[in-house]
Image (cartoon, rainbow, N blue to C red; front, side, top):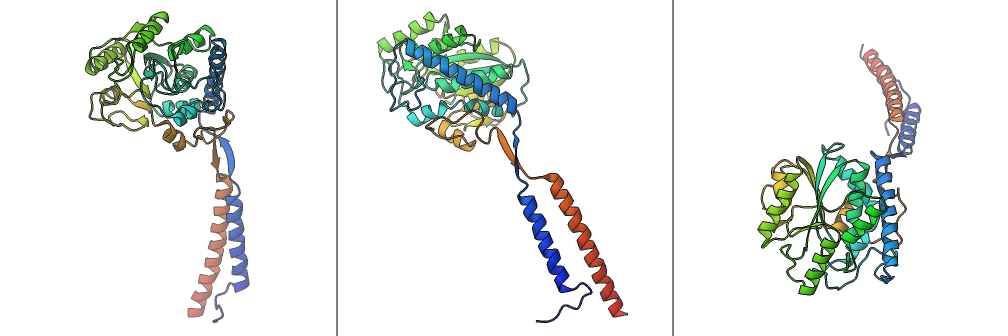
Length: 356
């Protein structure tokens, strides 16, 4: 092998190489955990959600509702049954179990903070009885951020949701209001189900939901068809003033109408076709948060699907990020730049002198 002829000897260059590798090693090992944006709001929302879950569990126990430890392994008391008179359609148990993670409230904060909304703004909210735990997480997030929701709820529920006739989602809301945890309540409610008019339910099931709506002193939204249901919902929201955000939780009849708009944050103007609520709000410049496809949404943000046991509050990427030391990187870069400058300077001078 040909011997190097430059002024800088090969052993010194080897030392410089090792030194460079060491600097890179120290930088790679400077990774440290830092709190994510809106950490305090996320923690507060998740803790409030857990308090609400505890009260719902207590209320369920007081009503002597049996606890199914197979289908509700974390014993939350917020997972319903497979069939009941107010069960509107099939439901995915894993999605219901995923929704009972109180850390989903941190995701709500993350999504809301990605919009231009500010304290005191009005938010149109569409709920069903199918994911009561996620409804509670949304309301907790809205309370922590001091936003004003206008809530319309389709009272019926798919399998494993709030489908106990004696303890619907509206009843859960009432419990939380009486306990002083959440002052927000549904202002208007429909029966839900196919076409938002209870199609697919028995007369007994529809009557049960109508009684529940009246018992909780909530305005009843009744429509002859899906188009009328959508129009009435939009009119109710608009009557409250300037809406800055629309949040939909698993309500497809009036919100989707034949199109899948995607899940998570939908920017204003992103959905251009369709007559559902999501399309109408998006076309008029209102951002939308569509909380659907829950297991996929949770996976996207690093939350576990159907976790057993439930994770502690504050766990996961929603609360912490990992960063490398910028200061150390800058110092290393300066050192390397000086070393390279010195090496090149002496080496170039050597070759210039050699050519004279």
